[in-house]
Figure 1 (spheres, rainbow, N blue to C red):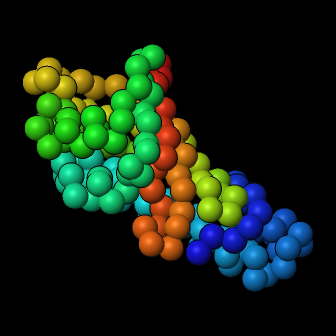
Figure 2 (spheres, rainbow, N blue to C red):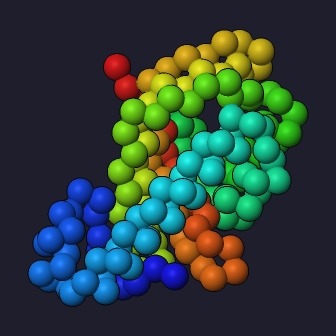
Length: 150
């Protein structure tokens, strides 16, 4: 379960230890690993077209923004279910995570290859995802934004 306090992946452990004690450092590392694992499970589910896993990892209220449009969880699952969108490659370059209690944010940078409406799509992308944690479901995406990166 996440602990209280803001923790950033790039904050040195010795700073955490000095500020909050060794127990908080261990919780911080566990939170960061749990959130990164959830992000990578999401990437794997997208790549596999695993609608059941996507359903578990996306909050029912999720809103996704891309190119000025917004999409719901239902929209996203339908794209995968009907294979209107088929992700064929996820090449992660960078993954940063931040947690604060039951809220987390991930920033993904990488190359995505897919087909959308049977048209090939390759782009270097930046995704920002906001996650909520609860004991019943673990980490789930509540909001996401994606943009292409030159």
